[in-house]
Image 1 (cartoon, rainbow, N blue to C red):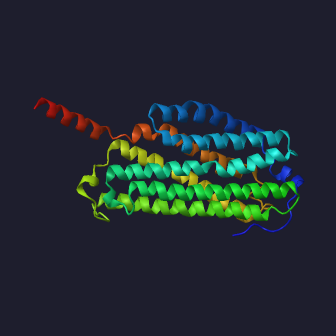
Image 2: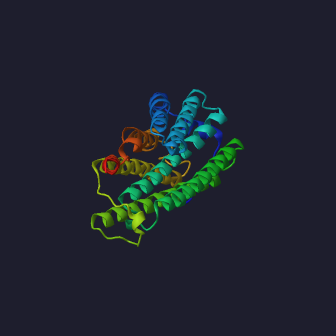
Image 3: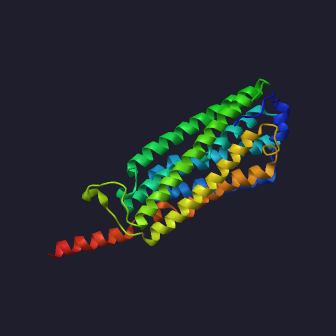
Length: 294
């Protein structure tokens, strides 16, 4: 998959990438007011889920950055800085959100029992988040190269191909993550452990109502990001002069819309609420009270 070759002038970019102003106002305003300042940051602090700040909260900040730059670009279509900012911001924004889902899966496995997983919960976080960071770097590098090429009135194909490689790699990582998660849940359902685990580490519990809701939220969030990644992969593979990259409504719904839904999902189905094992906590309290009574 490679971008079509050919020179890309900034005058062309200012035409193709000139966004519809009302859609940008909607996305930017909603995410600024709801996602970052009020909900995600407040929830992370309230529940002391500090890892949500460099993941979901950072994704919200980057979305605001990218869409604000698109608003700026709509007002000043020939301004190169606005084009560069929206190009890099919108391509990178969902990556930290993917990392949040990787961490959530590890914590769910920790509750269900690590014996049903090929990797330990800690290794899920280390391996997938490290790969996610690598994809982030590659996409950022590609965006920078493409923007620089446009500023020099050169072909942006190299930068686009680098971005395409980063998004395609992220798409593969999401597919592997989904496959491993599906195996864990199937093994849990049929009580078929994949490896031996020390009895002290097993920690197997039933699938609580809270955990089922969290699984639904994680699954829907992952689906939204997957759809967005497929769209951006096809968009970049189709080329800078293709009909997909120059059709605003595709970007609004398949990029901005999907990322917004994914962020909202982790607002309303927040791991601080639904990932907390209240049943186990209550049982532990009862045990402690019985031990004190005796």
